[in-house]
Image (cartoon, rainbow, N blue to C red; front, side, top):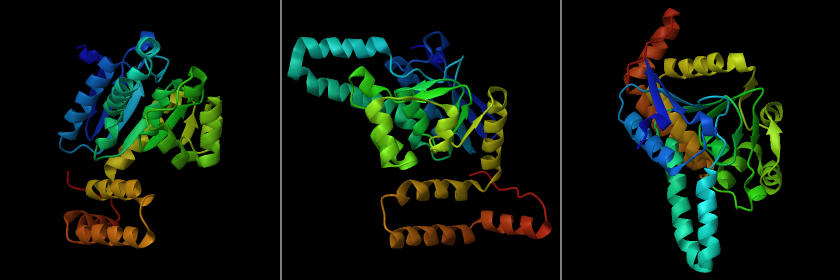
Length: 269
């Protein structure tokens, strides 16, 4: 297995994952996905980690699913007919899990979309908590243009970000959009000039890392559950987490820093 398909770099409290197959525009193969999952497992075991950045090597963020893999599945379907449906279903479901493992991290994740992000490649960015994109990048979920039903959680993440009507348009048509439109509809947090992307993402990750780590992780859990529970349930969760905070070291340090007019120095998780 070529471990260089996904690079991992750690700088202080922030780690960066880089999809690293630039000659193929970082197309998502099973081999890359298996390395990606191992990197996620590694990060889950690293103490003190407060944010993870995901980006792509070269000019593209990710061109989507590996075409050779898709063509092999199409050939299998054509050859075996309905008998191939369940095996293909199982293959695709396990493939999704390799890349969507990024959702299993405890700390916030930030997609640095340095170039085009298409199909499943965009889906991985949608699985992150935050997204920043180069103003020259183009984004799209072109599944239906390939004759495919959307996958990689596209029908779950996209409506939550841009609303059901915009999600339906993008998924039905497979339309490719510019970075500015992606920002306007809320698909990404911000579109910035290419030369400013890395600095912008680094500054956001550093700001996350400077906040109270346990509070940030609990906030991430709260946001993840908020769309599936009622107000009373969410208020109970918030009160429980605030109770934990007031009995731990983070609130004491945060209040002391505010009182002393200095930057807080929160303990590592």
